[in-house]
Image (cartoon, rainbow, N blue to C red; front, top):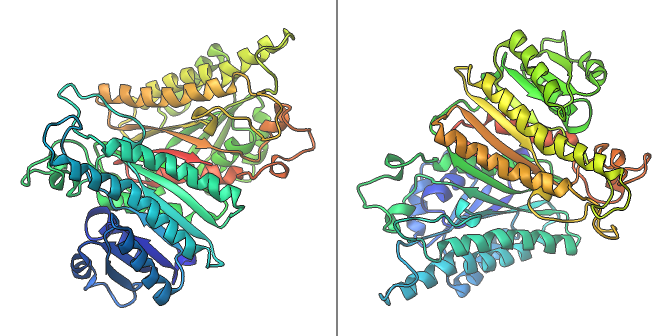
Length: 514
């Protein structure tokens, strides 16, 4: 966090809950904070006992449903502080009511929700951006969204969230629009992310009349603490400047756990597609953190070669094992060996994946085998590997983690590179959409099984500099994808895996790097 010391952050909805926690953590890390809320006095009470070495907190009264209040606030920031480096759009509200009610009082309530959660966010973001442009330094916009911004659950008792889901879906779309606008402006110094929590223990549910004053949400359902959300924001800020995680979903499970990698030392991890690229980086990073790693690949000799620099160095040990994840028999034989050798598994990273540049509507019958290989490697193999790993995880009395390396193509259909003439990704997108859905199915199955010790996450990278594009004939054998398009490094994805492993067991992440 040293790179942010002395920088200026603006936090909306800063008087209580998540916002108050963010203000405290920012100040603790030496950041100058402009904390905005309708109740500035509440902010002043919160920060009055902060140690002198903390960054300064400026408590400002600002009603983000009022455009003039926003303008006045940012005029003051410009005059007093000059620029803005971090914006956290945290202000949000809800109200228990239906849209199709005959009670006319809800008209104002709905307008307040929309103006706070969406319109105000847009205005605040635009005015913050104008000051970010004045800085020659890197900047970050983080929108506190919600799982309600990604789906609308059906309640048999009736839907009482009215326009709230609509505003959060709007935040999801607007975050992506902002990212695309920054690309069009060729602005690589400002990153934008959406952070979507599940249930968090704040006063949201009581002020919105979802619960009576004397009842806490965590008494009814698993709930995150505001500090969990603030910790994720600190993580986003610590990432290298060229890494932009545009969506993180954080959900509670049932148990609190350690925040350090020490908890995994001596445990056993399995990584598929471990010979090169992302898989190789993950194997090495896990081993460096004291984890015994079984690296699976069709070419285990490559794993054995890079394992020489790790094994015998006081780290965890790397075991190379030949496994073709497109073959069920190979998977069964592999996990029988793992069971005999280790007994249990604690971490599974489903990383194996392939693609091939061609079209589905192709006259060349050779593509039939290509498509079968892609589907069996990317999807069918992942399912079989996960099931057999789960059977060994069940034997463990400890917490376990399943991480599926998905892709942004699992969320929408796009060309890998803008210069494609037509769509040549064929079944690859379908396999990644299948991985995204299967990750959620696994999560729901674990809930049905009342298994709170196994977590499952999906990470969806954008373009990563690996041999995927060369092996799939998307680019020439001597080409590099970063010569064609901005690209992440394999180590960036491995770093995200480590963060998923280190964070509290009460948090469930669904990351999207692009």
